[in-house]
Image 1 (cartoon, one colour):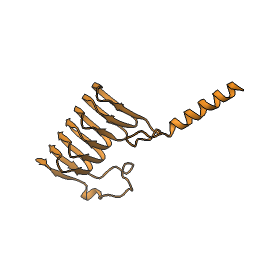
Image 2: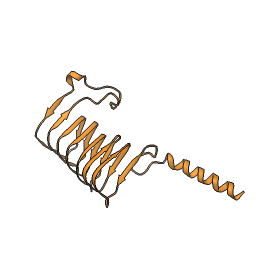
Image 3: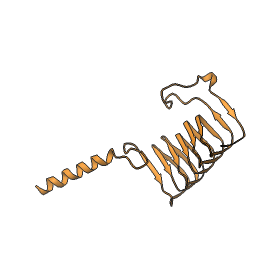
Image 4: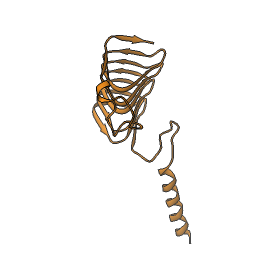
Length: 160
């Protein structure tokens, strides 16, 4: 009888962990990689899922999902992801298939290729910006500009 209870308890715990959300709203259903504030990465990281960076990175980061760079992070790398949110310091080019968000504490020095761009007051963006329509599999409602109105290029510096 005691053995049956232990097996049931393990199965319930495993099922509960799969659907769990952490404090930052990431759900447990997909692959999520987190580099903490004391973590550092030198090289190339390609993941199928979301990436949350709080530490330091030199090289290349590529995610099939979203990339979030927190305020304590220091990045010297190229970034490629679906939605990219920058609250920390990034030196390198960014390719956001849907949206790039620079929060008030974020600083980006590099060229940007995006479908949508949001720069909050206080954020810094130094580089060239190229805007284009999101690929059909990436667009949120398959809505967006047509191919004819897809490319807008801006050069210069923005400080909010």
